[in-house]
Length: 221
Image (cartoon, rainbow, N blue to C red; front, side, top):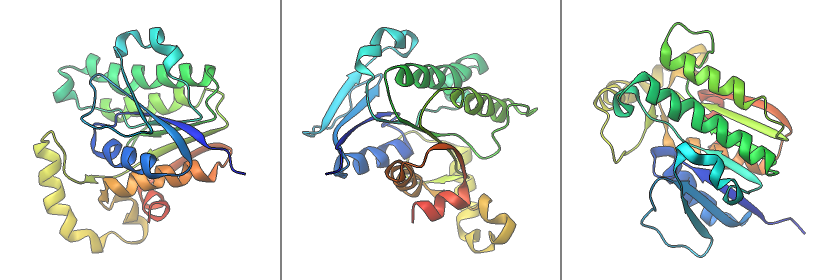
């Protein structure tokens, strides 16, 4: 008989996270889904346990961050964060602390959304932070680590990002030209990323895995 597990998701109010939370709640794999965030979501479900925390004091909530599979969809923009320092805190510090705490609490798998172009040595601040986050998450002793690097995300956001909306309008009609080596740059639906994350968790493949956008598309199809 297959073990029924607990999932923990951070960033469920976001574009990918919202889709992923719905999938986790419908999945027979999980008997409990813990959603961690700054605010409670307007959602009630018998499997859902909402934990409202202060991310700056994450270690104080360690007792509540216990799960088999950890899904991290946390992320912001420099504009929304207000500064490079605050962006770094959300997209690096919070995520790496989550990985450290949940690994110590016995989580087996850690699955995180990063970004295409993530590179710890990049001259571009955004890509550099994402790359440093990936590097530091991979230092934790999970049985499986999955890093997802989607290209431009498609879907309806609650928050408006004018630049991304414009890019989506321009690039989505051109999707057919993203073939061969260009396939990894093809815009991807946020729901597809969410499905890929759940599929990777179900596979329980040991080791460290980095999924470029074209691989995410196949995994989430």
